Length: 137
Image (tube, rainbow, N blue to C red; front, side, top):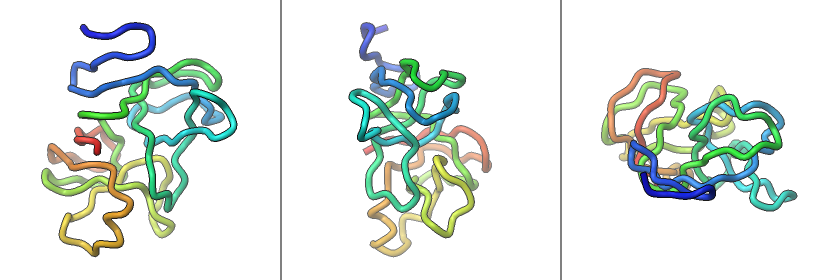
């Protein structure tokens, strides 16, 4: 496929870049991550109620401090905390949710304030606690 050591196009249709895992743990595929502000070219878990997201972890089992692929645009497989329906939006966890670093599906018709936390659109229907294709934007 297209790419080099620092970027690649995934088979799912995502644009992935290689960044350093600074989550403090091994990676879980589908986790939502943000820039780790104290380390160059690194990511950490996205905070609850954050209004931004860097991307979605593409590789499972990468040790803390090691390089890891992160999907930053296009189609990503997001670990969904709740059941998702095609056409919903995917958002960052909020303070009343149960679980960090996972995506939450939400009916697109919900309040406009909740859409601030949107990371993309759900492209398929999926059960809770599984990977689900999301078009990031």
